[in-house]
Image (cartoon, rainbow, N blue to C red):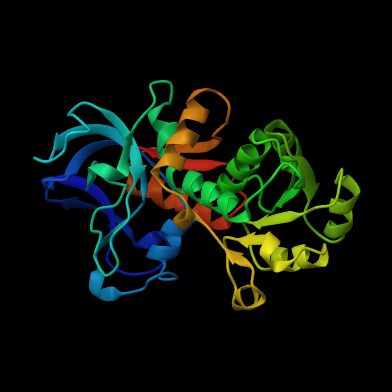
Length: 314
């Protein structure tokens, strides 16, 4: 049997429980991974709270998407991986299917095409923190089609997606203005961004620090930053949001994210992190027990986490 975090009902972190599930056998094109770590993402609690895709007929459900670990079994048709390989990736259930085991489990079974070999210089904790944020940031920047002539503003720039988007952008030679709290100003400077504090007068502060006119904005927080971008004179097609509202969609703003990225993007980010070019900030590491996992998701729901939260799994 395998221990996994599951929920039988929708609600807050209190609905999460540890369950014993039958060990899965990988199919012909799948691998089984003994999980070493799982990265937490806001989408996780939005799913188990019922905010996204609420369908009680699929309960119980597993929790978590991003994982790292070691291959413990391979399917008969798998040739690109072997037992003992250190890997990482992201789990997604197919539309209309139940995912009774998520990344917060001692073992996961996943398509061999959906995992990557972990760079040796990248720890299991850091690898588990990459999946969704790397794919989301990469997809968003691809949608915005940045060039060296651009100046990008990023909201929630100290969060998991925002901080990686900042680094990928500056790595490509494009100036970034990052919006965050004042306490995160030095952190954003260390990532290469010019920090500005959110709050009243934000548009004026952005104009005052911009070395040349702002041309693009990536919203990682909410609709108010789409309105900010429009107030800065940006056309809707120069704005990307990860948190779409009906108003933003009606205005023609890009709704972007990980669907615009793929395994090659995740590999690129992992290699850059392993090479010390990009930093992945792990804010806190939790043990694999139900109270710790509940506490982690409570913290994540409150917002203002700098970087990523990760659960280690023995």
